[in-house]
Length: 276
Ligand SMILES: [Zn+2]
Image 1 (cartoon, rainbow, N blue to C red):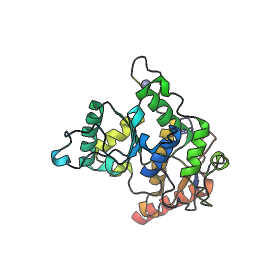
Image 2: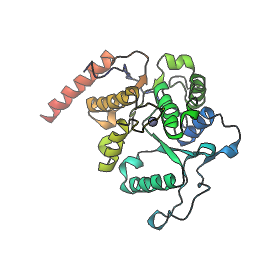
Image 3: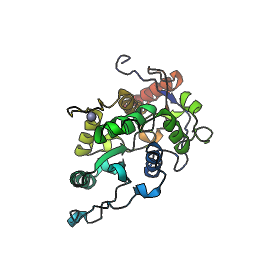
Image 4: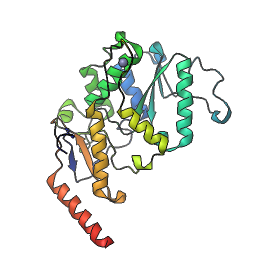
């Protein structure tokens, strides 16, 4: 176990939470894009609006017009927040695939933000560094900077204990929730087959373009906490009682709080006994 899982995630027993709108939701994805792309004029970005080049291709049962979450017009880049429906609902997934083709025909590229991601440094570098460079070339390779990263963090997140804007120090002290599933029932076990395929495919993402300067693949720092969160659910055994948040740490090893671990183990034993 220790070799595979290099990330230290501290499970904490107490339930901390983000207040409304203080985590990576659609609206905050827009904020992140505005800061990373240094967008000052609102005309350069659109939110929940149709593409200017939109044509009539999107019809029939998919009649609702396609209004991408965030569009960076100058670079023809679309950022979309993928909620759990994009993994569970066959209709959503089908529509996503049609959208994908359509936006490519219109010369756009889409970058998706799954609902179980959090804006850790590694996730931010991957989305706003690697993927942006991958889709739009070397001239955009400096979109990600650490300074902007902390600015976004401060505007979007709060310290889950005090609910004050999250500072660089808070981040360094491991007070950002890790990527993964926290207190939600929308786990991969609730995904449909295509949703699971999408989930697994994302985790294997690797640049296969020739002469691409992104040089990238999805970092293990994004994948492992997600896997760990699923394991925590399994340990907890009962979804209703799930109240384990975990934070994104700096050290590179797994370290589950011993008390929590003990409690989980005893719960498991108790459950087994009950079943007998
Ligand atoms: Zn690439």
